[in-house]
Length: 202
Image 1 (cartoon, rainbow, N blue to C red):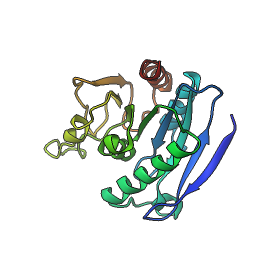
Image 2 (image 1 turned 90 degrees about the vertical axis):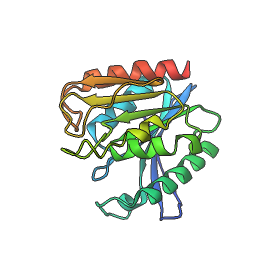
Image 3 (image 1 turned 30 degrees about the vertical axis):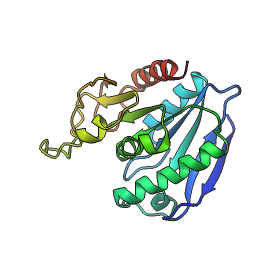
């Protein structure tokens, strides 16, 4: 599949979106990376493949700090502002007139949850949502998940040290073998993501 790489200006420097369009797309999936990783993570790649098979175009987004070559993530408000700017550009350009599901892995999932209303997301896909820091269950980030008003799918490794989010009124949780990397059962991940996405955009 052909990939167009687009540089998008944000208030915190340029971000980068890798856009793969499918013919007669029924929707789009926009995914962000984890705090210290990139868009080549195996779970992101598998989710992108599942989306394309379900008839969705895909954009994998690199935050400005990654584009600038930094590994330490920017503060949450900067991540959220840059993400919203990228979504606005994609909705006005290559993904216009498509319902857009946003999401990401770990830190990227948190960004998508916090900005779901602002970006007009049709749903949110969370890969390895970091419910709490390892060994610190009292530092729960569940309010970020609970604050999303559109359908949510969380794909979580059964032995993830960052915890296991509970299902909710509009939130499904798919448990797969493995830990926070989500690399142990790519087939199960791809299946869960593909089935859920197809239900969101039909």
